[in-house]
Length: 452
Image (cartoon, one colour):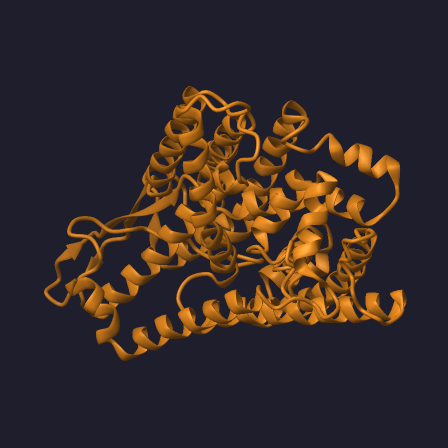
């Protein structure tokens, strides 16, 4: 209790914490505000009738339940994540953008962030038009989804404008939490959406387990649920262990003479995390894989719908799995290259008189750290893919189970919780207060760059 009391004993920390909780509360309230002219209950019934639960459950997961309610926040933070991916990928191939990211400092990053916001608005409007068309296509006799009396074109424009404004507001909330609150704003918004759906998911799981124990028809045997719970437990343990795992790189500093003429040498180490990229590769991979399926729902292109169906974990798990693993590995390496720059780190070490024993300062140190970081990133990428897929493999054998118990959900919830706790821990320690833990420290990740 003393450690929790310390959170409110520091005025600055108390303001940050209350500010974060206030914005998260506003975000959750907005989820329940539907777009004008839409009957949210009829929309959910129409989606269940259309059999789009697998895809829509995933999209609804990342929007915190706002998608199926056709809320003003129905698009969530997805357009911003997509825009961030576009500019980060372009930064690797366009020299001007690469120069802004790496050489222009804070001014360059601010300019890229501004362009990312502009692209977010465009993507949100286009997706809003598609989402409004989807809502109108669900209209059926006795099940009116769109009840607006205005023309279809006017409704599409109104819905697209409303959803775009909602996305901009969500993006603003995320940025404000990152700058003036505690934790990473974008990750916390996704975290809040998943946690909000956990009570309902736990209720569904409890009912299904009870029915299974009573040998009810059309319910999997108890062994499947035991495997699922065991897999979820292993995922939680793996996340806690790997997120705190790091490789120590020893660093020695040149001998310096003190006022008495005695020379001394300082030694330290640089911790390189096994999973430097955090949960962002999984979020990026999920957004990229389900983007074609989302577009297919808004259009009548049969070839796109057929192609997107092969990326569904519910119907084509063994095709979805290698694609998901490959995309996750790619974004793990890509995002790590943004978060950690070996050349810059090696140059800073050289200027401060530091060196790795047995490695020449400068370029050779950069190559050495890049080699170690590549091996760690590969291990971290495989870990991310494994903990995301294993629970999903088991839950696919349980019809009707919520997507909340997939590895992706658990990874995001645990990873974001640990990152936020690590930031709180560091803020308390900086002000000479005891942290949350009796022993040890929680080590966080760098959150610089991109949508993270």
